[in-house]
Length: 337
Image (cartoon, rainbow, N blue to C red):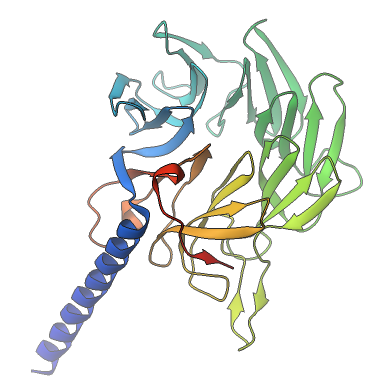
C-alpha cells in the first residue's frame, strides 16, 4: 500500500508539472502569439525567408505567403542565409564540406578545402567565413578565393569585419575575441576578460557570451566608442543572498539595435525563456516563457524572431519545432530586468 501511494504521488506530481507547463505555454502564447512554422533545427532568418534543417531536408519558409519549400540535403546542419544565398555544413558525402545554394537558380556548390566536422558557416554579401582545426577561413564567392585570416574558431561576419574566438593569436592574453578587417587585413583584440566565446557582429557592435560561470552572460563592445557593457548579468547574488545571472549565454544573436538570447533559469534577473534586448533603451523583454533548462536557439532580422527548441527538454513536446514571433504584429509585452 505504501508503494502504491508513492506511485500515485509521483503520477499526480508529474501530471501537475505537465499541467503547469501547459498553462505557462498557453499564457505565453496568448501574450506573444507565437507561431509554429515547422519542425527541425538551427533556424536562421533574413528578409522574408527562414531556413532550417531536419538533418536530411533543408526548409526555406517564406514569411510573406507561408510557403515551405524543401530540398534534399542529407547530413545538413547549421544553415545560414543572406539575400538569395544559403550555406550550411554538409556531410552527405561522408566528408565534411560546406554547401552553397543559390535560391533563384536552384544550383548548389561546395567548399571542400579546410573544412572539418565542427565547421559552421556564416555569410554576409558574397563572403563566407568558418573555422576548422583552430583556423579561421574567408571565402570570397565573387572571386572564388579562399584565405586563412586567423587562428581561432566560431567566426561571424558583417560587411568587411570578421570576429572570432582565439586562445593562441594574441601573445598578451590567453583567451580573446579578435576582429579582422578584410580591407586592411589588420586585427585587433576586442575583449580579453573572463572566458569570452560565441562572438557575433552587426554594424559597430560586437557581442559575445562570457562562459566563465554556468551558461554565461552577454557582453557587448562598441567599436565606435571603444566601450564595453554588460547586456545581461555576471554571476552574482540577489538581495536575499540567492545566486543569479550567468544563465543567458547559450545562444545569442544581434541585428540592428536588438539582441536575442535564451535564458535557462528562473532567478532575480528574470524568468526563463526567449528574450529581446533593445540596445538603445538598455531593456530586455521576455517574448516567450519556458520552464527552466529549456534550451532554444533564437535568431533575429528586423521585426522577426525565430527559434528552435529541443523536445528532450520539454515535457509533452513530441518534436523539435521551429517558432516565429513578429514584433510588428504583437502588443507591447512586459519589460523585465
